[in-house]
Image 1: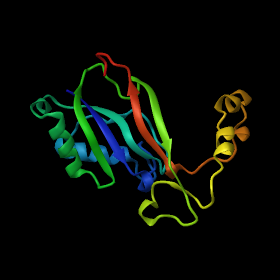
Image 2: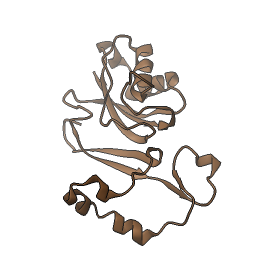
Image 3: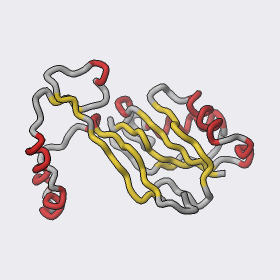
Image 4: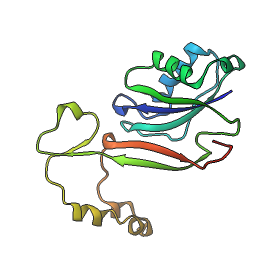
Length: 182
C-alpha cells in the first residue's frame, strides 16, 4: 500500500528535508516515526529537498507500507505518525495513493512563499519564521529586483543580488496533475 503524506515542519532545527551525515534532516524524524509503527518499511520519498532552515507547510511525501497497513485509514496512519514525531514536524494529511504515484516525479510544480517581518524590532513570537528586515521596504524596488527572466537571461548569479536567508522561505505546496497517478 502506498501512502501519500502532506508534511509541515519548522525548519529551524533541521538541515533540510534529506537525511544527513552531519546534522539532522526532517526525513530522519519521519522515518523514525514510521519505523515505530512499521519496522523495516522502505524510505520516505519527498517531493522536494529543502535547504537548512527552510520551513514547509505542504511538502508531499510517499512511502510504501506493508500489506498489514491496509486495515488502517490514512487519517489513523497520520495520527499514529504524529504521535512519534517532534512538535515541530506534523503530518497534516495522509491518504492512500495509487501505486503509480511518486512524490517527486509526479509533481508538476511547487509554490514557495517568503515571509518578512519589516519592523525595527523582531516579534519574539515569530522569531523562527520570517526574515527580520528592520527597516521599511521599498515595494517598487522589490518589484524591479524581481524581474526573473532578466536574471536568468544574464546567466550570472551576481545579477540577482544578495541571497535572502533560508529561514523566511516556506515550501507552501506541491502541485500534482489530476489523474490516476496522484
